[in-house]
Length: 393
Image (cartoon, rainbow, N blue to C red; front, side):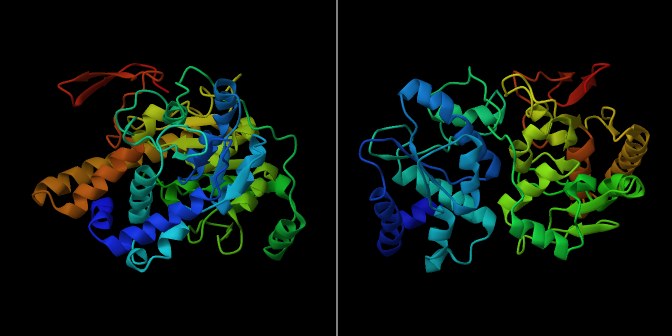
């Protein structure tokens, strides 16, 4: 749906939306650039990480308007001038938008932000760093994190410094919440983060590959989710723990195991104790937690592609055999599902299941594999047939 067109055709609705930006304009600094950030965690992280380069080019940092739940990110790069502002929450106050899903709100806020704000830095004016029109998501030929610098007119020749975090403090209130759940020693705790916004996610069977072994080693298992239940684990629900608290907890845990998500970007300082799994559909982004940073990070990045993966040691235990057995099962499941799809003349339930399995562990056709800094590990024939090289992870 074209939400912007609907807004422009309804004068009352247009005035309501415009008033949001009129009010925000009044908070802009007349003598500075004014940047509105309204995207997800990883997007906002890289926008803020780009401000060091922005300052080198433009001579100063902008005033940054940032959703309250992400305000803690300012400390990662010592951003001095920040104001809490959540465009999504402001749009949800308008009656006609209150029934929209989160995905629909994402589209809406992107459309209105790009319409009412400048798309480039101009002093005293509000501008956004969105990039979907200037540097489209699917055709961009570098790691996606550099799109934000491109939108700030910085190019993509620079690399990010690591967050300036000497020590992440675990606040007293966070400790109390953890104790109430029976968690007292985070150095003997493993955090699993199984959810992401821009990719298919692994099921419980995958994460349980690690839970049993790690539990036997004496680790408590905590899960960053409201409902993702694993064996012998404790949920950290969002009604109790804020995103900032999850990041605090993650930095104090012995290990973090996560699907590739925006949370991973904020945890790059954990180095090898951060273990990140890339579904096949995100192959273009493999290496995206090391290549973009100055000096590297040593984050343990594991890529699934063509039903294979790299090796993985956690606390001295080799999980490679377990993972490879699991991947063989998924490959068999894929071919059985494909056969059932053919026998039922393309039944939707089998097609969807096949695509999900393929995007997680197989060839991963979800996103264009077009990152020039991370070349394809295969030859492509007739646009569909892949011939893999011997070493590709």
